[in-house]
Image (tube, one colour):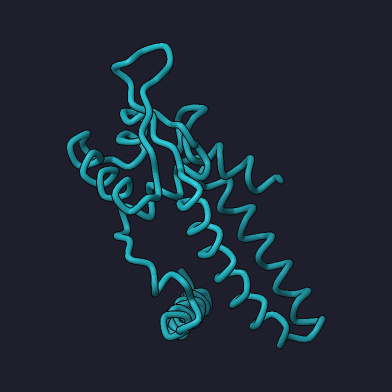
Length: 167
């Protein structure tokens, strides 16, 4: 790799690190006031895309054991963020659903991030916004291609990313 490219990659990494550090100090971010573990947040985010997913499928997507998932879901049920139901066709299958409270907390988290991003973007001039849009669109194209290359089957997250990026 040439030294110019290496220097550019270091600049990108440094800017990304500074941005993350600045965002970590944003006290308006609702993520800082939510009492959720990373695994619990992952479950809620997966349920936002796959509400009613079977426990076994959720364990596969998270890469955890059924026992681990059970503990995570138990705590989310106690907090009122999710519910469990039996499958209508097979009582051995437990389905996990977002509750209205779970949907609301995810909406608050998403809205908080969107508001913070909007505050920053409002400070940029039109030319800079245009450049940023072009760069981000290109990064999305590369990310979609990479996710698809990494996946083998039609249910791989890369396929979801491709569909999400398209619309």
